[in-house]
Amino acid sequence: MRTTTRVPGAILGAALLLMVGEASAQQPRQTVPPNTNPTDRVIYPSEGQTQEQQMSDQLACYNWSIEQTQWDPYVNYKALQEKGYVAKEQADAAAGGAVRGAARGALLGVAIGAIAGDAGKGAAIGAAAGGLAGGMRSGRARRGAQAQAEQAINQFKERLTKWDRFYVACMQGHDYTVN
Image (cartoon, rainbow, N blue to C red):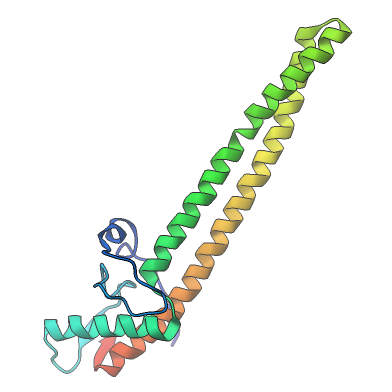
């Protein structure tokens, strides 16, 4: 049976802001995570476990999965967000390349045009050439940042799938039906 792992709303957004303290990827979490079921599994207590017992078992399985994989979904999602932010910041900075290139080209064009006798025409030609070069650099930087972000997202999904397999196995070992 093949399982797929979703990145649900439980692991996204504001829930991360509720985390208290830093959790090491090498050690079990010392604080309770925002959700002990970050992949939104349907968990049914097969042996009549109480809600309190289920919550305790989920936390134990959450921590056990971290120990087995040396990977914490919440800590790594936060890192993924930070990487995404850095990639976007780099792309935004590169987007200004066309404007800066046009300005440099215009200045150079004014100087060349003044020598040739038409500073205005030289500035226009220089601005166009400089903007084109700056825009090309900007596009390459945006594509590179996007590829970097996609790679990080794919690595996160792969690790989450592995972590989730351990989580499901642990919950099933505690007599829960998990889908």
